[in-house]
Picture 1 (cartoon, helix red, strand yellow):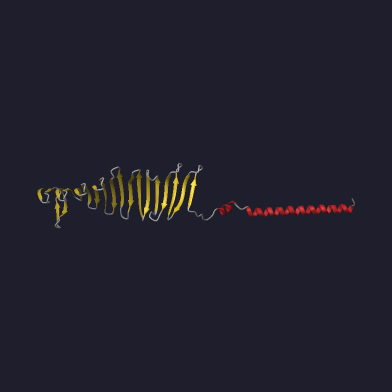
Picture 2 (cartoon, helix red, strand yellow):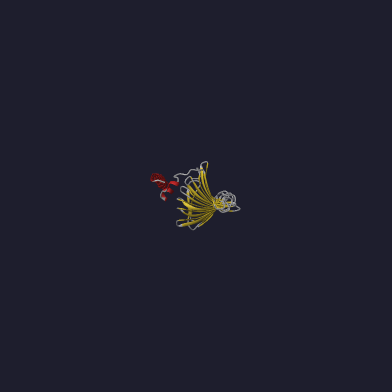
Length: 259
């Protein structure tokens, strides 16, 4: 091989080497550019992966066993959030509907559960067992009411508090008031009623006096013990002394008194 052939061979080798070097440089540039495009700060990448809004009609959450433990849903014009125990039984429900502005149910409906509801700006709390409602607390515009129910006879005890006074009433199996303890600005009074809800007796305390009055089934006064006053049917007012006893007949005519 002469000198010219050797130079020609070297030039070919150098040309191949230059092409290889150019290829390697090109690949390095491409790798750097791709790295700059795909490699972003962790915070920026996380921010891009989290959407601003997710829209759906329902979301269901399950545990590792596939049991539904939570559900968010919209049914027509009502929204619900339900939470379940490991057996798939609903234990909590949070709701918002046009009729119930906001509501919370704790426990299983049909078993023992509690219900907190705000309806038309009137909050209420009710406690239930298998037989139905057993207690209720309600706050109205100018009144608070606590109601207790006794099964199986539905006997009810009711506590009312308002700007005009407070009272406790007890009803029988038919829902008729049988006893009422009332406290007003005039003083406390205990009223008793018969099975027809007719007022039959009253014990009251007013300022510096106290008295007992008993009526018959025709709403006629039959006995008056102690002080007080009474609005008569003819429009006049009768005042009874603190130490006095009055007895009346069936026509409410006075038959005896002392002193």
